[in-house]
Amino acid sequence: MTEMNTQILSLICLFIGSTIFPQAQNFSATEITVNRYVDGTLLIPENLENPPLVILIAGSGPTDRDGNQSFMKNDMLKKLAEELTKNGIATFRYDKRVVKQLKTRTFDKNIRFDDFVDDAKSVVTYFKPSYSSIIIAGHSQGSLVGLLAAEAEVEGFISLAGAGKPIDQIILEQITKTAPFFTEDTKRVMEVLKNGETTTDFPPALASMFNLDIQPFMSNWMQYNPQKLIENLDIPVLLINGTKDLQVSTKEAQLLKEHKTDAELIIIENMNHLLFEINGDDLVNTKSYNELQHQIVPEVITSIVRFIKKDKSTIEE
Image (cartoon, rainbow, N blue to C red):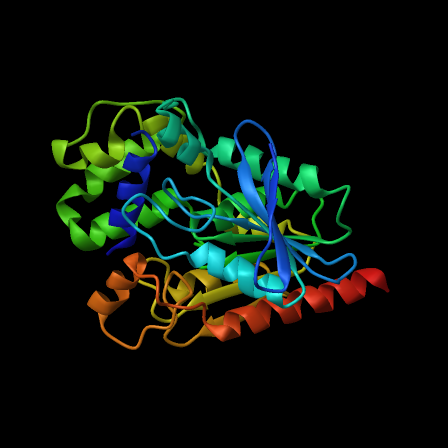
């Protein structure tokens, strides 16, 4: 599965009260409604005062709080949240607003990338009075969302398989590799979108990517350059990518590192886009997106826990 195909599928998908319950593990889980757009699950370690809080932001498409979509279930974000909380870190993960829209059939064709950023900032604002240390961890597209939301006075930022280039550059690179005869058409349309305008002048083969309904979202998304955003972050940063990631290569993490030289960079061998260990070929890798038996690579958990606890001790000093 290519980066371009994944982004196209995700973009297409965009348009189509609190209850506490006990867990067998050493944490409690509470369902929380932050606002009319954001519902999520808060996990709190038991018998631990003032734990740090990690806000987990999902990647592209109609992804729910557990990291799943309608035809893709792997519980990646749920597993990540539970493992972190077992290690003394509170976590909050939430459904992207499009998930609720799909459930209620109230599709908002005017949705913008900035809406995802607003949702993440709302989550930070909601928890800020209750936690002295808040860290944002964004996965894939959620990394860019997190970079923008990190302006809301958080104590750390973690990029999990996050891209280092703007989305228009990523799409253009993929078009050039897989369908070079559409390169010039793609460049022309991208220039129109970057100027905040729309167009119907594109080949039918690119309609899934440049449909008129999608263009305003794309236009908004491509205004942001992760390299420039991470340069402006004045907080500790952790970058994690894997060598078996079919969507975001390790070069993307290295690019972010170049623009944030004091960031900690962790490259994990045989880890894929979902933070699972893959010891097979690309087919095995792709199948893991819809399999529940995989677990988060332990080095992801230990790296995050070490990063957060080191950061928290610095703040307390």
